Image (cartoon, rainbow, N blue to C red; front, side, top):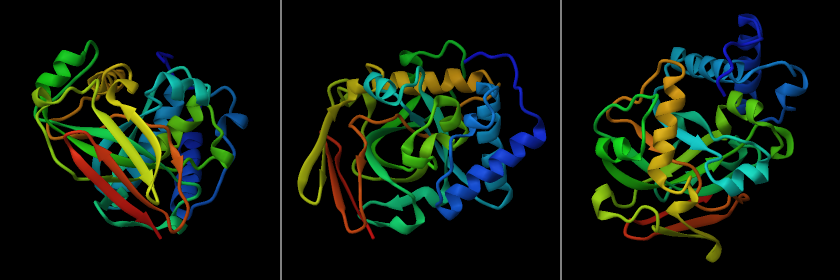
Amino acid sequence: MNEPKGNLTQSQIEELAIHLENAELQAFEVTKITDDFPSMTYQDAFDIQWEIRRRKEARGNKIVGMKMGLTSWAKMSQMGVEHPCYGFLADYFAIPDGGEVKHDELIHPKIEAELAFVTKAPLKGPGCHIGDVLGATDFVMPAVEVIDSRYKDFKFDLKSVIADNSSSSRFITGGRMADVADLDLKNLGVVMEVNGEVVATGAGAAVLGHPAASVAMLANMLGERGEAIPAGTFIMIGAITAAVQVNKGDSFCVRYQDLGTLTGKFV
């Protein structure tokens, strides 16, 4: 991912940011942007994502956290990508536990069971590792991410998905918070139910072998841009379970070992 520079002009980056953000805000599908810009680099892709972030902040939205995506070896091979990616979480992405997600505001949402780390000290790459993350973690809590790629049929390559804020759209958090020392994060089990039926199960080790490895990777990827993870940051680590498609009217419940449950409904 260490391509030295981008191939797109600043005006192309701004145009693509507007194009992808409009697709998110108005819930319409687009084709993957590398089809039209095959020479774009990872640097360009992240530049587009940070431009979308800048646009939201300029409009008065707050950035309330970060998320990692494509953090399981299985998911990387399923999507044909070679590296995880990150995205930001805007304030209006947050849905309360037990709340309603408006399906019409999204294109083809899927839900994933995740964990979230909340930091008490800053983390800065390069060279950040699991031990650094565990030492800088205030607490861990359960989270459900609603992913919603803006690309037609959820088909994309890694550069296109990074530019699209790594398919971020909504998230639910709550349940119980716990100290990392009190959890066996690798073996922590989750069970996802949709409309009362079990649709997916998993354990923490599905995320890069250990959930904290995902946060370390985020710090190292941000470090490539000279950015750090500030203290007090909410970070979703990526999917522990497979992503499950949801339809209008579906209710979900995710049960987390030692961390309670999260529920919600698509309306």
